[in-house]
Image (cartoon, rainbow, N blue to C red; front, side, top):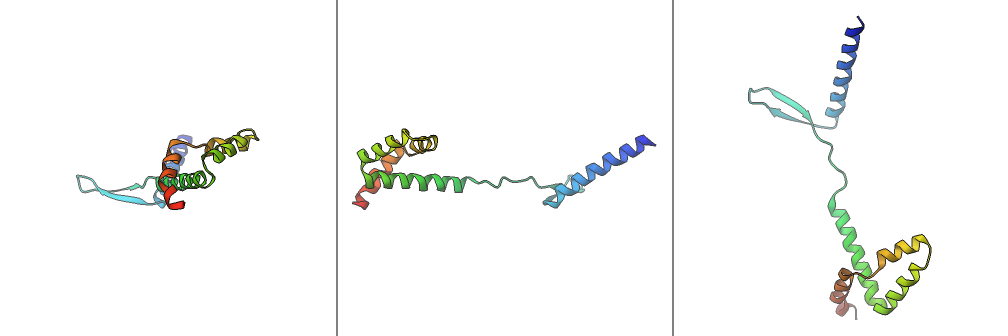
Length: 114
């Protein structure tokens, strides 16, 4: 009797798992023999690349705007002061250091800002 109960509970557990997966959506597919089989949809990633890319572009534009408005020498002095600060300021200095992309964008937007 114990073996049958174990088989029943394992089958019940498998069916409950299938039910939970189907509750998030499913796709119906027809097999070559005409049998329609329902399969649960895969969980899709909620993080897409577009918002991350837009954030990077906006941050680069912000850095370039600061670079142009402060001037190269003053900008580098401020970043150097940040490097001597706390750990958070050091991380900020690493992120805000002038890189080739920032300088290139600053060169492009500089005529429009002056």
